[in-house]
Length: 134
Image (cartoon, rainbow, N blue to C red; front, side, top):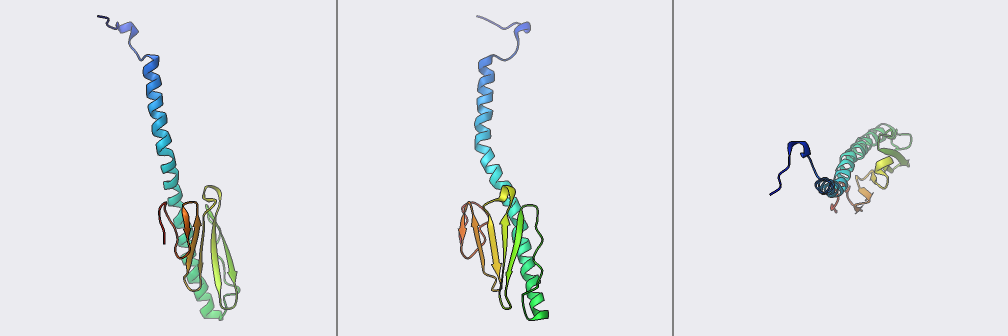
């Protein structure tokens, strides 16, 4: 029977390799889920600004009887905003930047919502997580 002496105590190379392999497998599984979770956390920046922008557009229309000239929401950390207005219609678009590239959300004067995301498109809703649909 072979016993380790106090001077030889420690981990063998095989034990360290197994531990590193386990950590690598866990990281490979967890990282994509974490990235999706972070993206999901950035989406309310767009949807909140679109909702507030829609209210501002309607207030402008009530005062001026046109959507032309209404202020567009300012760009955020993860989304840029663009407004397309006519006298009787508007559409506000939030387009993802940086880590949110590929995400696009819109709203118009009828409160019609649409989205384009890497997780799927929503012709009548805002897709806010993987697996969502309208």
